[in-house]
Length: 331
Image (cartoon, rainbow, N blue to C red; front, side):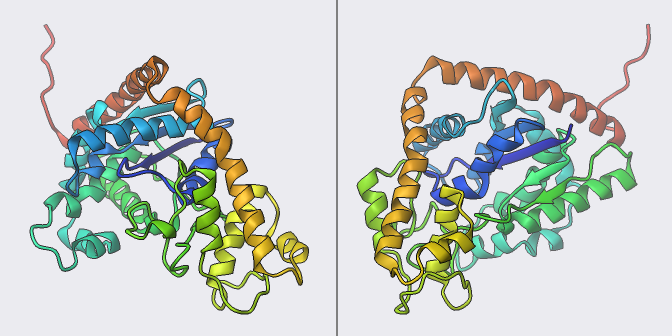
C-alpha cells in the first residue's frame, strides 16, 4: 500500500480550484492508500496572520476536509503545529539546504518581490515542506503543478540526506491530476484561481451560496466567438469553465463540446453554475454540522496522536543518522 501525504495552508477560505485540483481526488486516494492530510498552519505564518483569524481558518479547513469526504477511519487528518517532529526535522533539512536553491524558488520570488521586511521563513519554508513529506515515508504527493518545484527540492534534499548520512528517507513521486489540476481565475483566465485574490469575482469559494456562484460564473470572462470549445491558448476563459464543468459533472471535455455545439455561452454558463452548486451543496451542509462540534476536536486529537507516533519514529532515525543527541550508556 502506497503512502500519500498532502498539506493545505489555512490562509483563507478554499476555492473550487482547491477542491477540484486536490481535495476531490483525496477521497478516492484514501480507499487504497495510507493517507496523511495535514493542515500546514506553520507554513501560513511565513506571511503575517491575524491570530484569531488563523485559528478560525484552521478549524474551518479541518471541517472542509471532512465534509469533502475524508474519512478519519481510513486517513489521518491532523494539524501540523500539533506534531512537533515537523519543525524539528524542518530545521535539520535547512542544514542541508543551500541558500541559492531556496532563492531560486518561484514562489519566494513572487511573494517577496518589491516588499520590505520579508520574513526569513518565506525563504526557508521549503525545507519544512520537505520535512512534512519525509516524516511519513511518503511515496506520492498529489499537488497542483504550481508546487512541482518545491517537490523537486524535497526529492533532492531526501537524496542528499540519504547519500550523506544514512539511507532512511523514501524519495517521493509527484502526482498532478490530469483534469482540474489548475483552475484559473474567472476574471483573468491566464492566472490561477486564488483564495487570496482581491477581486472577489475571480474566485468561487467552497462556502459561497448559490446566488454568488451563479453570478460569478455568469460574469466570468470568455470571448466573443460564442463557441464552446476547449482551446486553452486562444480561448482561456471558456476552456477554464469547461474544466470546472467537467470536473464537477464527470463529463469529458469532448462530451461538453458536442452537447453545447451551436448553443452559445449563456446556457453553458448556467449549466456550469448548476454543476458547481450541486457539487458544493452536500459539502456545505456537512461542513456546518462539523464546524463547532466536539466530533471535529476528537478527530483532530486522534489524528495528531497517530501522526506523532509515525513521525517521531522517523525523526529519531534522522537524528541518529546526523549524530544529534546522545547514546545512553547501558547500565
